[in-house]
Image 1 (tube, rainbow, N blue to C red):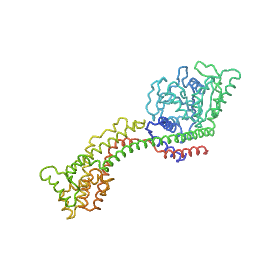
Image 2 (cartoon, one colour):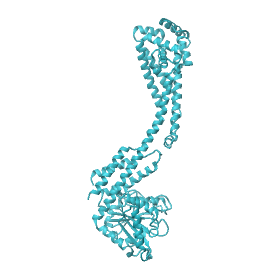
Image 3 (cartoon, rainbow, N blue to C red):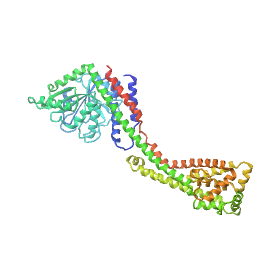
Image 4 (cartoon, helix red, strand yellow):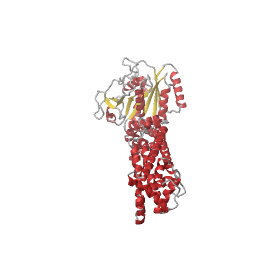
Length: 587
């Protein structure tokens, strides 16, 4: 086979192995099962058959409980090779029968690589992992972990028979193994009985085989040996197959027959089936046709699986996006409320307003700029008497108020985000084991440090703007801290941080005083520029603080590995369909 074929299969396998589909949304469990089944199908049948179309045809003998599969296999070989009996399930470990010349095709891990090889003499193959036979009675839900290989000269070269567990076994592990083995089949020899052929479970499996275009031969076993019964049953079975749209290759009828002392059917009872298998083994072209038909159908089925997985991958991504939007909504709301608290002047009430009035006074508005400077200088004189400078106290009060607002609003944002997550199963899955709304240790100090750093930025702006000789003298007469607080007040009191002299909130008169002080010192245009820079730096620091608080939620979202890429899987679908078509067209 050409390299592009192998590449398409390898790429799809890699995409499947990277998928985890972690969010417990509707259909997730089914999608994960689809991924597992697809990988098994690739490893058990598609990849090995694609790599070696000339390998012996694998005929899997399967069917419902008590159908006589093992008895039939023993009859085809001519002596007991697999256990049969009344106690169910009897097939504890699958047995693969092959001609001695074909041993190399099955001794390694070419097909069914997950099953260790055990030879009829009990020796393990060197390249298989150690196997411990637990004596599985069928009561366990765990499937067998080994495949018994038996070389039989009665099996013609180019053909291998695999006796599989019951598809409706009482043991869940056996049912799982039976379906795995059927997925590995090139040809499925379905065995049923005259009184069980209408059972629902076998028909479900038959329908699945038809959908994957598996070549199916049917054996109806234990037909009462009375005139006209076989014909009547055959007619009824074919009608059922037609109604279900299930196409089979051949139908074999085996009459009810007494078994000998070794529980063996007489050879004539299976003569027609034996001759058919011998003819098939001798016809290389027919074997290749069957192998290609089943392979192409399996690849087509794989493309359908890829499409279903891609659709669920898209649902997983959309759910992850929705959870991320819940976080963004909660914390953008918190950021908006912080901005509103700053821009509407509400932070200038109470302690902040009192400390600012200590700086500029509370009398009627000053009639001249000189009066402003003289009043402010008088207030700043407290620093010389040993009492705290009013500007420092105002700066601290302003910072404390901002810190409280940031902590309170980000806490509300975290609570809202976590509540939104816990309202859905996917969100609960992400939040499980994490107290996402808890205020992180040291966060309050982090906020305080960020606010202090911004206040330092403002003071540095004031120093830089007052660097020329005339402005520096007036700046020093008032004090950098007092002028810095005035700039902070202007920023906080102005709608959307844009000072105009008209747009003021709380503490209107004293805020206007601060703005007039700044305009007198630096000029109107400089004040606008300084306020804009101060606003931008404050915005940056606040954004970082809010993002920090949203961090635990983002970390949980980033931990969502294995969501997959629907676009990649869509490409896989196209390439698998092309591969199936190429297999059908090649001769």
